[in-house]
Length: 356
Image (tube, rainbow, N blue to C red; front, side, top):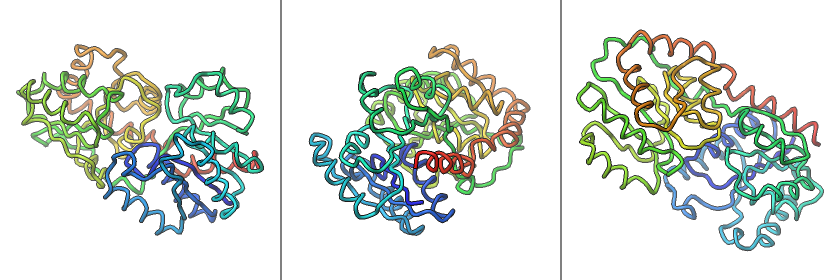
């Protein structure tokens, strides 16, 4: 098949990484792939080095790409015209939209079937707009049960659940028997923005400031300076390492003992899936599809509230029991197969054939 994916930018976001991995495996299966980006990483104020590596990985797999341009956000007719040009050049069998701007532009390309994946547990637009999208979308994809259940009452087209996934080839091997390690390494990977609720994580981690534990925070975002100030105010600045945007996420995860998320809202985070595939015990808040991963893989704690006391309790339990961490690690390795990328690719291709 000839498949066109439309995503926001070649940046270090979970949805972007996921679509890139899907595209690479689809290409390895013999399909022709073209990726359309709304804008460059620079247009979003994102890391340029990561963008270069992202685009190089596409070229290495003979995946072509193009950019619509940031100005299309305020001029949808411009975005529609540019997408129409890309469709004429590439001639796809299906257009897979991964953001709602792409859906708006797709109304300028009426002959090619459209699939839409909703990557968040939050609706970015009024519900009535999705009924308008029904005129163009052949099928919707929910990335977890929570997202699928969010979409089904507000659209008239089929909503197919295809859980987010990750490529195990990007996750290095990790020894799960690490009781002899003196310093316990907790790690977070993601954007430093309000939805990730990192203030809860830092406030909770302060309970461990006199213990042999450190917290590594990998990612970029506008909240970094504020979070660094908070870490200093909590007297944990020497215990918390802000790594910035990194390309070796797998290595950082492999060197850690516990993966943390404290999000206020989520879809189904790719970082959580990668941590699970690599065999990390996890602590997550009960938002989006996070709990679904833990309930399926039995690899950690789900904190049902956004309360510091509850999150601290989970941290202390994980800190105090090497046996429990080993149990969670073994479960992660045994039950995480459902989140491998090849299964997700197969389900996507089956859906594409149906809508075409």
